[in-house]
Every structure is written in structure tokens, then in C-alpha cells.
Image (cartoon, rainbow, N blue to C red; front, side, top):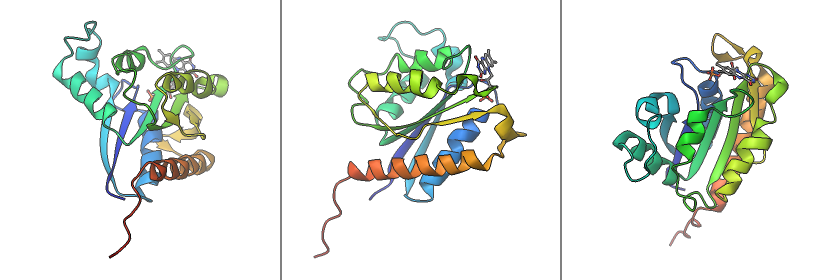
Length: 186
Ligand SMILES: Cc1cc2nc3c(=O)[nH]c(=O)nc-3n(C[C@H](O)[C@H](O)[C@H](O)COP(=O)(O)O)c2cc1C
């Protein structure tokens, strides 16, 4: 298997982010199993261009670059903080500019963070149907962590780390299904 293009999308805004730590945890577990080429997209970094964007025919270069990376990915690892019971508005705004056919069959790991467990089902009720719209192959194990699972922006709940490892294993298995078979040695 050649290098797998892994693209992460984080719906966070701040410089420090539990969501990014959670995404990193999954990607590190994936990287422990297969060779990857990684691209990270943070909606907060795109905010000045993305927030003002309404015309799909006038997409600024930075946003266009992010969209090209997303639609060229072999595997997506996405995550968002829960804001008002849902993924962040700017996360959805970025997703809204993806061509509806562009993620057909692409494996996607779903993650989210929240202040409490109250909105843990954002994974099943919002992120999974969103990527279902695109006919993407969402990985069965979703990953939700609450603020108390982190200490100083480090993931300190071992149960979440175990779950991240499981999601990563599932993702690698699904990615392998989509790869060309390794040719027999001559
Ligand atoms: C505007 C705003 C709205 C939020 N709404 C919710 C919410 O509805 N449910 C929840 O569990 N946490 C909510 N939170 C808490 C964040 O989801 C939580 O602290 C998250 O881990 C932050 O992720 P980050 O560190 O990546 O920014 C909210 C935080 C902000 C700033």
C-alpha cells in the first residue's frame, strides 16, 4: 500500500483545541499502522475567507485549496466542538461547498468534543447523516470526548484513547479494501 492521503477537518476556532487533540490521537493511531501523507484543515484558520463566502463561483484560494485536499483524500478524519447542540456553523459552511458527488465511498472517521456528555450523540444524529448525504463510508466507531477527558489540552482518559485506537483500526481496514491488490512478486 502506498502513502494514504489523510485529511483532517477540525471545526474549532481557538489556537488550543481539544477537538484537534482528539483528531491527532486518531491520526497517530492510523500512522502507527500505515504510511500516510497528512493535511490538516482548521476552519478557524479559514474563517476570514470562509465566513464571508457565499458565491461558489468565487471561492478564495485558501478555501479552494482546502476543498481540493478534502475531495482528494483517501481518508478523512473530521471533528468539531459541539456548539449549541451541533457542529460549528463554520464547519458546516465549509462542507456546504463540497461537490455532492465528491466523497462517494470515502472513509470518514467521525469525532466531536463537548463540555459534557449531553450532546455526545452529535456523532450519530448530525455528523453521520451529514456524511451519509455524500455517500461517504463513515467508520462505525465514532469518538466523542468531553472537556473532563482532557487535562491542559492532553487527552487523559484512557477509555477514549482505546476507542480512538479501535476507530483507527476500523479506518485502516476500510481503506485497505479500497486499495489495489498488491501485485504478486514476479
Ligand atoms: C459557543 C459555544 C457553544 C457551546 N455549546 C455546547 C453545547 O451545546 N454542548 C456541549 O456539550 N458543549 C458546548 N460547548 C463546549 C465546547 O463544545 C467544548 O468546550 C469543546 O470541547 C471545545 O472544543 P475546542 O477545545 O476544540 O474548542 C460550547 C462552547 C462554545 C464556545
